[in-house]
Length: 404
Ligand SMILES: Cc1cc2nc3c(=O)[nH]c(=O)nc-3n(C[C@H](O)[C@H](O)[C@H](O)COP(=O)(O)OP(=O)(O)OC[C@H]3O[C@@H](n4cnc5c(N)ncnc54)[C@H](O)[C@@H]3O)c2cc1C
Image 1 (spheres, rainbow, N blue to C red):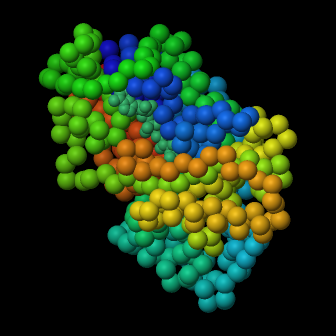
Image 2: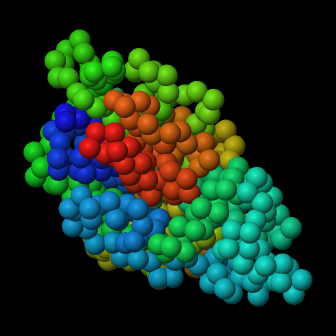
Image 3: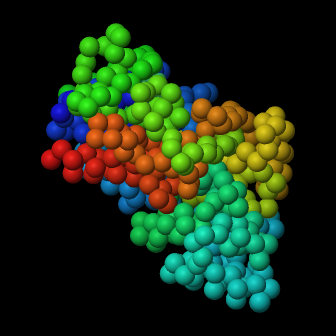
């Protein structure tokens, strides 16, 4: 079959790498570079990113790692150990230890909640915030987790999503960091697509997608190619605007907003390769230090620290000021003065953290000829790029059933 893919983000490239084994694939990308919100930007000797924090939510065993392997990519993902620590009362605590930070009554309640979550014995129709709110520390910890992982407040996170995320966590484990960071993954996908004779056309702005009963067309006024299948890696909203198909029906995808700060620092604020959650900070949800896994991600002799915060209020400048003040406090507590803010990025509207926040994702199948992949159509419980991988898995399973 001949397959046209619009957008060379992680979703488009992953679909392209898997489908180019047995099909003729052409990928059209608007920008001069590929990878979308999952690639590196070299700056002052550091490998900063266009979006992600160089972290794969379920590490070497999750959906993304499995699909990369299936596509034939050679990528080493180092699993985090510990997955995460929690900074409470100016000390870093393990997950197990945080139960000892509350009184006996709350400790028993908290352990019961954790056990019920593990076996799925919870009300699926409430939010994660409602599930946690009886114990103030649990709510703060929940907010730092959903803020870091989903760029959502716990009250905006459906319990159904948390249940599926917990299931995936117990099945696949916690996060990991790929060698080379995000671009390590993207470079491998490009290599595989080219090896399979797939084409990637950059600097190509797709303005129109037309689908009829027999074929699909990309920029039909100037491009004579006809496709059996078209896959859009753009947001559901943009895909609908560019195409002759109705995509958003009853369910409306709500983007998740966030702020990321990249920091260079000679001293080690974090010794491990997992997440340091910051439940007591006013805005920041957590930070990681990907150069603890791949030192080439930072300038020689320095560390790259990446901080993430959910954007809570609309005034972006105020939100950034609060994030910077949290960072100042955190480094101050550790007596570190010589850190350098390398880059501050805010994500919303057409370039958000996720095009659909968890729970508001659409179905990747529009019809037999037209599919979506990416973070507007993540599968249930798919955190970030694991959700992107699930979208690709779901679309390809449907295509295989329909056409093979
Ligand atoms: C601050 C931040 C931190 C994050 N941290 C993490 C993390 O640590 N771990 C994680 O797993 N995920 C993380 N994410 C989420 C992750 O980066 C995204 O979910 C993922 O990269 C989305 O990939 P995608 O393929 O859906 O879309 P995109 O990356 O947006 O790809 C879409 C592509 O389509 C192209 N395009 C757009 N319009 C057109 C057009 N008209 N014609 C042709 N091409 C077009 C774009 O240029 C782009 O290349 C983070 C995101 C942000 C913003």
